Image (cartoon, helix red, strand yellow):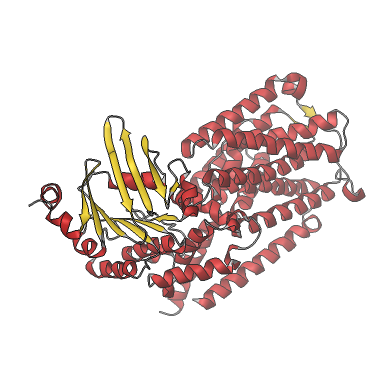
Length: 245
Length: 326
């Protein structure tokens, strides 16, 4: 059974077809890279998979279960987590509070209006464990406003990891990072065990190619090329639309 | 770092104990029934402001129609008493009516946020004001409804200003304790999350709409309770209470005091009630003074009186320390 199956997915905004008959089949444990020029519909595809957008036609299956019509807020409960290309964090709070919120989202305690959030021991413990995985546990109490851009990227990843997902969607996790920061993030991602399936959108080919086993090239909302690293890089269509020479 | 935090904490607890002691003994050192009554007004308006603050401060949902909800509970109390029912039943029905109207408000206005939410709550508030004005068989129209008696909990008649003050203080203490517990709770954290990053909260598995809906009901409960105290205080309810200016006044209490803080709305209520009652005895255009104060707050402390004062106090302390040990 595939981890993620996308069949004949279509989405248009008015006359603009941003996703046209996209098919995607990601095996459990696979590391998939999605590339494509700006405006190819990569983030739209993510928004369709996570349910933030509703497709016009086609279907999405998560480990065999049809989730095409499942509310987006239900999907994390089914084992899907994502990070955002534009960092979307709770800027007024501490790092650990951000990660605790990610954990609370999947816990029935999120409806509890009586007990003290600070005394939710399991949220704090699991939150610290997630921060440990991205190397930020030592500054867990620091307000987010006092962190660097690279650290915020890692908080994003920690929030996704804290939810213990089966499928992790990463939208440009290296965007805007310095070389050193890129290596930190790269290390975090490589350390994620194989029971997590990962799909990543990325422009930065150096780090991304190393990460991925299979690559899908999107162009004008369509899958142009798909295959393993060598196949895609050597394909003349890739050179034409993407690598540019 | 830790030392200053502990000192901050100790200072805060000391301030709260002193403030509460002052409130508890107020009728003994405050001379004149008039001022005791002003204190009662501040306290029930503070409950109202705390209720609105749940939405404005913690939920990021600005309502300009809360006076309408306030009016529903006040009219329900008056009407039930007019029909000859007892105080207990009148109070229960008033709370139920307040919650039911809040639920309808929420279902209609939570379809949007931001300006859209403000406009829908404004429209709903105006509809209720119109009903109070025109549905004469129920509300008495412009003449309003008189509430001839006040209840006597445990045999103490609330006709006595001091008794009324203590009942109001008790309700106020319960309200602020509830808010304090609510804000620190996981649900409170979730509500603040939906204020800051609703899209993210949805992607993390939260039901953003439902969180906002329950927050609305909590806000509605505090609004209803304060409305009942109000109607027993004035012993009269008329459409004026539901007017847009009343909604704006309570919003002013929240914003001037400091939205998203527990103490802010209380100080805001104090400011507005004092200017309205005490200053209006000396200056005819008290609205003008209130406006001027509000403008000053917005310029000097845009975050509100309470957080702003704390910030200025810290700044002053740091300056002093710097001068003491150069």
